[in-house]
Picture 1 (cartoon, rainbow, N blue to C red):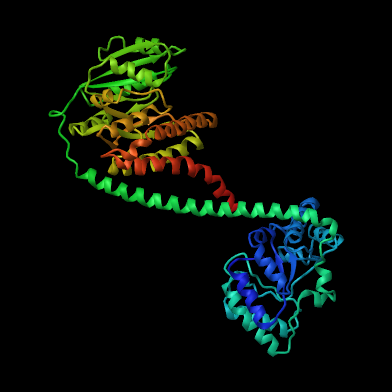
Picture 2: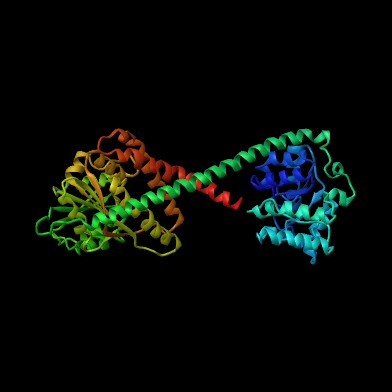
Length: 537
């Protein structure tokens, strides 16, 4: 039962050939599709082949049409592979052979009406559970001597069958030594093998040929699924280990970092908040900045042509605070709003955040401290999901921790962080101006600018202590919209900066970061559904 298996079935066939024994193999169609050569080897060696259904279901729970489909699929497979049908059938589960309920009787009756011989088993050593070679042999021999029956059930597929392979020669030798004759099912039924496996009629040859083409195609699909699954496991594991190693390296290097105190390094900072239809959260966001323990900063709010009262709400709430400048302009997108804000300030450091993001009091200080190093062009903070309202947002919270922040920690070691997030990031004004500001030529303006800054010779670092809480999409529609913008924008950015592979001083961007985007953010998500399908098949 349960074969054919590419590892164990050929070994079992070799043993049978060695002892000149003919057996009956009850095949599962899903396994046979991928091992059609073994099916031919079985038949050419004189063994009989029966049907064990196509997918190994519990037939007692199936409708008549579903059971017919299982049987017909196997028949089509045998017809296209061998030019033969089979009249031998074994249900996948032992309890279905000796039915005790009407549900179990019904499929057996149907199979009989269709002309099949339903084959039971009498001596079952449970070799599928790997009880040990000696236990398998003893169970078979004891059952035969006790006269329990004349059909022995063994398995050549469905798992590790090495014990079955090891037990089989001993079973054959001991049975023959005790005078037993080992024969295929046809001898017990009293019908010739030719009759139990009749040739396909001439009128069916054309259909069999088409079926053969279909099964070859299915076989290739299964092969591609296996390749995708194996490749996915290899790539995913290799990347995980590599990123984990780099993250540990970054963690220890950060511990050794020494920063200047605020009294010695306190550059001017402008916090730029682009806002579009954010009247519900804009006040809360600005207040989170005002609670900052960093002193030398101002806030620039750019209302990007909102259709709600974002501008009016912010202007009214902070009309008396000289640290806050609020502007409004026609709608032009986030990149244009950020560039508008940059033009309104001469601050040396620019901190950008989305209008639905809240900073902790020390977030700005944590970001700014890195810029005492003139080689640092940008600093990425630690974005966390603040609205963990349902399963979707909780999943995103986990993703932010494990994926995005872990990646940034690792990529800092190679100086190839691919994006300083719009929710929490600081930029050296000089580097931003050199790069031409934020570009609207991609959907990921922050990633685009990050690439430009690295290619300009600056370093981009990550600070896990610079924490911001952002709002993640809490609906599937919003989630899909956000991820499409992220993925497509990142793909645009990677393609736009593909020349980074020839960039002196930033080779990691071209040799690691960009391939990582194409492999793990494009190719990997595409094959992931097929990997999942492989598990079920």
